Image: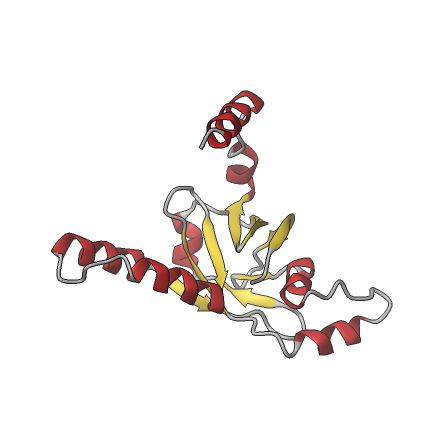
Length: 165
């Protein structure tokens, strides 16, 4: 399983494309690469599956981006808990799987197109932040990202609550 970390600013261009951060791309292969030899980095990444599933996050005003393999794991785990003969659970699954897209950064430049409807669903403008969050990547509008953090007091309170579990 790939573990993503770090925060990376990005801009949506006039054609609606955004460059996938090279640091996150490197984390897909475990390669930290050599800045002196970017062509070796490209050769290293050619073997990695760069397809992602992008959808609106269930809880926050951001998009979540899963590797295709991680999306399959997540979906199978959730699907195993759903009774498709239960109308409400079937409706939940239908809604959960709506409004998602498969995106793939270009091999050379890393540009990718995230559907405009998904970016609009989080109120993102041209300025985005890719945020590695362990098994997924969050994509935020810059302003939303900057205002989404917890206060130190709230963070400590949650840490204490979680530590008692």
